[in-house]
Length: 433
Image 1 (cartoon, rainbow, N blue to C red):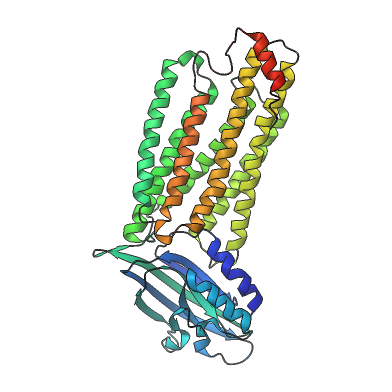
Image 2 (cartoon, rainbow, N blue to C red; image 1 turned 30 degrees about the vertical axis):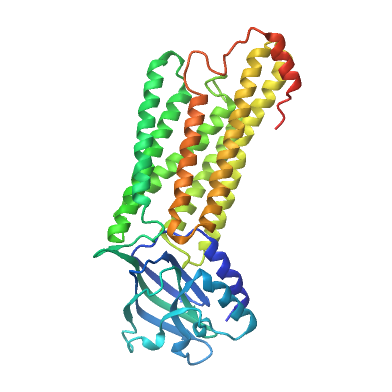
């Protein structure tokens, strides 16, 4: 049954970030995979799983198929290692026979043709985070079926379709929406007070903040409707639109600030334009991958590939935004040797190096630390990773906007009376990265 691919696939899929559960209707067509992961969900003591299958068809090139060799089961993360050991020690072992899984039903329980359907709800007796799988232990067989899944916990008498660790997300996202709205109002106030020092980049930064706020509002509404009804009611479309605009704007603002555009120079150099021309199309691809990952799930055959595309593109973009900052620092170092304005250049170099450190810290935290939190946090506290990511993002916005705020005398234009001290600082501190 393709034991080696299965051994490689199981642990990899469980490490990937899965979408929050909701009511899903899926169509599986001529699928020969030995195991299909549908979704992962954190159940409380009031949890319940409802699985409905219809239009089931099994085609085998090896003759008859034992219906008990095909079925659905739940697997906790703690039991995963035990199942992997069973698969390694016994080449012909069928995961449906494992004592470590929670078997829901097999195709033996289906109604007779032509209906070939099944619909049942299962209460969760042991609260935990479970993955819903379909296993096909019948050799040389393909399966076609329509599947409807409902995974939820009861909150009183109401169903909560968000995982136990994600049910706090609507409130969390709405709180950050309010914070960014206040941030936007403050930014407008600062720009109006220093209207003569406002550059085009400041207006772009303001647009970035309001897009981030709208993105969070749509995320809050999306999660709220999924939580109470099981479907996003169209808020997921708005979420993806504002997420695309926000991410493209964020990378664009970082690149433009790194080049000194509208602060130090009115136009971009050719190499800086090329960075933008690379990053923006890559962000389009990354957002397409994000939509596919979020709106489908691991049950599609190319889901792992889309995850890999998203991670690769994100890494390339994170590396690309660093180059303009490095180029600006090197350019200022070269200029400081010839133009005789040591104090001014020292201030600019200090500011750019600080910005470089802030960008690196932000990218490292939101990509590495947040992923680690998602991996190690208990399933009931998965929201902590989202909170950490939003706190880090807000801190980054505050620091970046403070460093490059519109004031009469900012870091670009500070003049130090002691030129000799500045020259010594430039000579002693080479501003190597």
